[in-house]
Amino acid sequence: MSSAILEEKSKFPIPTGVFSETVTSVHHYTDRLFKFRITRPTSLRFRSGEFIMIGLPNAEKPVFRAYSVASPSWDEELEFYSIKVPDGPLTEHLQKIKEGDTVLLRKKPTGTLVNDALLPGERLWMFSTGTGIAPFASLIRDPETYEKFDEVILTHTCREVAELTYGQKLVSAVRDDPLVGEVAQGLKLYCTTTREDYPFRGRITDLISSGKVFDDLGVPRISPKTDRGMICGSMEMLRDTKALLEGFGLVEGSNSCPNTFVVERAFVD
Ligand SMILES: Cc1cc2nc3c(=O)[nH]c(=O)nc-3n(C[C@H](O)[C@H](O)[C@H](O)COP(=O)(O)OP(=O)(O)OC[C@H]3O[C@@H](n4cnc5c(N)ncnc54)[C@H](O)[C@@H]3O)c2cc1C
Image (cartoon, rainbow, N blue to C red):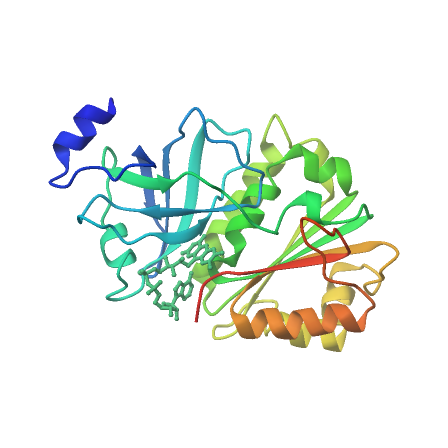
């Protein structure tokens, strides 16, 4: 669909300097979570794990919010995994989008949860809570991640069992994917819940502190010689997980100064 037709559909003109893209699919998981896919601007380049600002053409000055791109950098479309915040300035509208609707994208992707910000290692840990799994949904579908690490462990902690579905379906799809399936044999998913019964229960920070996560997965304790970390969750989860990784001797890195772990907020509290 041309951008002229998209503009006709919206009461408001598309702001200058943003991409105007079309929703290709929407899937609701729970009353708090959904994923959607949109067309990808041909000129948009990003690294797997980065985030971008998205908005809707529903106001003269639309609200834009940061979103991790959940699809890998090679994908022809863009995927996002979203919360639905009651009365949230963006998501109270975003949760109603349907195939054919328009989503706006600012042009500059950025972020620290990228392979480039980590020194090479053997085992990559991706620690996530809630929608913090989104950047990892991108990275576990990128063959580069498996070129850099022999083993990739994605941990995902949510309150309820149904909130784990997105990650579980994704990991099974990755294992069957013709592009990454073969190299992704070293991918492990470790899901835990905090409010409902599930085989693995509790906060990831408690499971790291007690050593249970290592015993459950049959891997050694984290070591700066072999292990690298990426963290994405609430401010509290970032702070506590970061302190634990530092306790194992890992050091926070960045794009300009790669090191043994990196962090990014999943949202602003
Ligand atoms: C770097 C970065 C990447 C992000 N990536 C994503 C993403 O991939 N998917 C996504 O859904 N959101 C993501 N967010 C959050 C997103 O920017 C918005 O906050 C969210 O879409 C809600 O927007 P809103 O305008 O409806 O409400 P806001 O006014 O933005 O938020 C209202 C309140 O809702 C809560 N909240 C907001 N986002 C979340 C969330 N994701 N999980 C739990 N509680 C939340 C917070 O308490 C916040 O104060 C990201 C934020 C940052 C900083």
